[in-house]
Length: 352
Picture 1 (cartoon, rainbow, N blue to C red):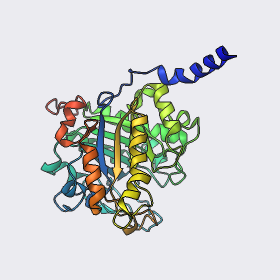
Picture 2: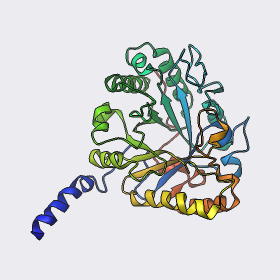
Picture 3: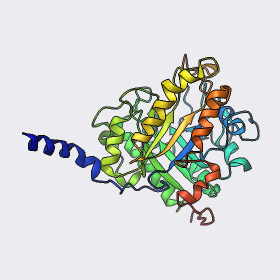
Picture 4: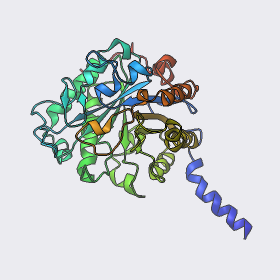
């Protein structure tokens, strides 16, 4: 009986152990090291020409910046923001879709952020995954490819169709996969080497969801998910990453429904941040990057009662966070992130 129990236990561990020590992925730091990203709008992040009172200016320069763009030209979202025709929203020019000011170029143009990895998340809301899949949005793909080509001094982690399983996205699985592949194929056709791709869920997915949306193992380098503190968040994504042997990016995380500027900081630290760092520590066999959303959510139209999670607004939490960032586990700008992920900005490439 005991022997059967041991065998059963080992069978559960085999998927986890099959890639132990062998988790690999482009731009992934070595095991035990974690890239630290901060997002998600220009004002909250700071450190750029127009906005300079955010995390970067008050807390420190992270290893990477998280940003969002839309392949949804002509679409109007439920907050009555219209996405302009003929351009990628949030890429080269500042725009606002009810979630703060967004402009990726502001980050890559900032000397303060020249050592940062760029995490860019591509949304295709409004059934635009169908149009990306069938080629109707190739103009937007070309604009994005040109941007990555023109900024080869930065490595990009590209989260295509992020939170693919979210009901708010409503992505068709087959067209999602075609769209994902079409974007990657365009980047590869330009012979670019300064990007890696992320297949990322909402963190609340059910078993089998990753298989349903997987565009093919050779089309993504990382597995990602969002973690807002729910008990089982990321469980399926972590298992899938271990199964396929790819590194994990906790691509969105925040002290959801906490108000760092109002609440007892020690209580918030215990209720969210201690759990957060423990979750990261417990999964360091695969986790290689995390992104914290430093945001006044309630000040933006898109969110309602999501909280205020800007670390710099609480002196106690800011101090505790900065102390945590001195842990050699976390890679910030001062820790030479490019070197730690094997990126060499001098090795430029260009489209034929």
